[in-house]
Structure formats: C-alpha cells, structure tokens
Length: 146
Image (cartoon, rainbow, N blue to C red; front, side):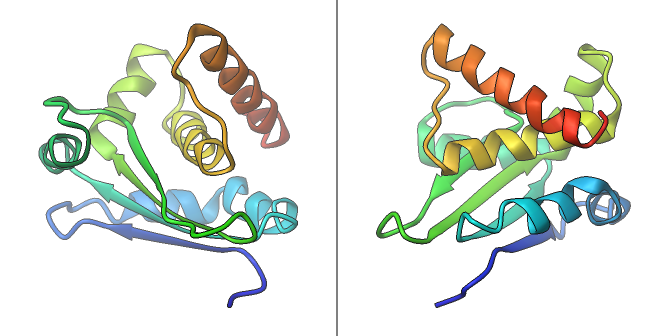
C-alpha cells in the first residue's frame, strides 16, 4: 500500500492541450496538495477529456446526456486509504471560467478541490450541501491566493 498521497494527471489522447497539464503542475495547487493534504492518504487520478468524452462518461455512469465539469468516483474499499478517479471536461472548465468571470487557473483549481471534497465525503445534493462545499472550495482557493 502507498504511504503518501499520489496525484496522477492524464489527458485524453483526443485532446491537443498538453499545456493544460503544465498549468496544473506549475501552479501552487499541486504543491499545496502534496504538502498539506498528506494526513489524508489518497491516490487520485485526474483524467482530462473533451466535452464529447465527458458526455459519454456522464451517460454511461449517471444516465445524464450533458457535459459537466467533473465526475468523481471513490473506488476505496475502506476509509483508511482513499482511491479515486476524477474525470474533468476541459471545455466545460473553460466555459465556466468565462461564465463566472474567473481565471482558468482559479476555475481549474476550484473543480479539482470540488472533486477532492467529494472523495473525502462531502456531497452537493442539497442547497445547504452546495453552500458548504463552495465555502470549503473558497477556503482552499484563498490558500493559493486565488
């Protein structure tokens, strides 16, 4: 078993956007997660896909026929070690950044935190749940000065 956090970032072969992965690894989030979330033992794969691929995943797993910014899957067998996969739509994250007048870096980090919060047990099914998650996302974005 792995003793420390592992965060894997992968991009779909259908996308020609490798600078997106560089944006992640060069920003403070990647460093912050590895330095400050170490008490949570987790191994998480982040897969970046196109809108078309995201719609396919959303249909396959949730029977939803639309693009979304992130799908999060907790694959853990117990609570001692979190194993997860987050599938992120680059197109939707870009759209959200424009719609919410945010930088791409800020919106990307928010979505990554959103997925991680799901993995550690938070939900956004009710209005109150959404407020709690948004407050936590904002808290962590402040650590990154975003």
